[in-house]
Amino acid sequence: MRTHYCGELRANHVGETVTLCGWVDRRRDHGGVIFLDLRDRSGVVQIVSDPERTPDSYPLAERLRSEYVVQISGRVTHRPEESLNPKLPTGEVEIYADRIELLNGVNKQMPFQVAAAEAESVREDLRLKYRYLDLRRDRMTGNLQLRHAVVKAIRRYLEDEQNFIEIETPILTRSTPEGARDYLVPSRVNPSEWYALPQSPQIFKQLLMVSGFDRYYQIARCFRDEDLRADRQPEFTQLDMEMSFMSQEDILQLNEGLVCHIFKTIKGIDLPRPFPRMTYAEAMARYGSDKPDTRFGLELADVSDVVKDCGFKVFAGAIAKGGIVKILPIPGGTNSYPTCGSNPVGTCSRKLAKQVPKV
Image (tube, rainbow, N blue to C red; front, side, top):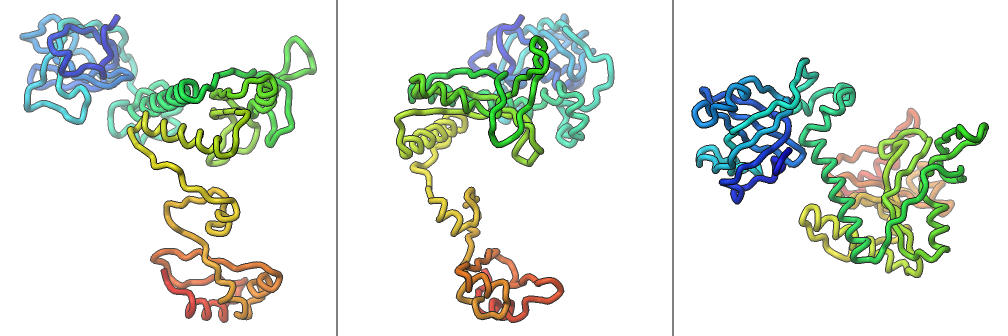
């Protein structure tokens, strides 16, 4: 039904007759000449219907509205100099529509406008109710295409450059004692028995390693019946790799190479190697976390020598038992200090205010 995708057309296609299928993104009537932005998953291209140059398509072009599904055939031409759109990949060309066929119309009022900038502010529950419309938006389409490109880059790197093979492990399995509860699926053919959905392919990874598959990976679906968190949901996808005969340095080098390959392939960014490294002990000492965010330079400062004789028992007692006291200096902050119950940490606060510089 089509010869090209909308977002593929460039100046080198000028003079060709093409057939496109997609959704009407916008319709504009400029003094009798009708302009349509035709959209598919690859992008948007401008369609022109002129009553003089394209009399056969003009009557239908007048009736088209946003989100109508159409098939359009016409010749690719250069846009006039004054109407070039450098913001669009297809901004140098337009198509004069010799023929338009309506494939599907819109009979009801749209719950929200897909093409409008206001779609970003539409309530989430409304967008999820009409998910098929939400996924037409540029942002959502871009997210899915980005995910596809990342997975494709992972597969090419692991298979072509690192000699991995992809193996798919079962989804219906037995329950395993791991970190979270399993989702259970009752068996119809075996009453009172059930399957469990895997939290990760852990058992199968071990089986494959013992079998001699020294490098395997999969883009694995994982299921965990646990409370939601900001970075966790009941089901998710993870890159799962298993390797034999590898040192710790080999594993670090392989994963650095994978991350660099993804950024280079998807965004054209060359990440510097090797990546910065620190031990667990150093991370806890400097940041108080084993997954520190190093972008802001907020490191803990040891003030044990300052507060050990301040008279505040919480600090003094901890230091006497071999502990340490650290503070988090805030850039541009003020020297304000906590209270203990209803009593301010007076002596300690005054001593800290004199000896710890404002940063």
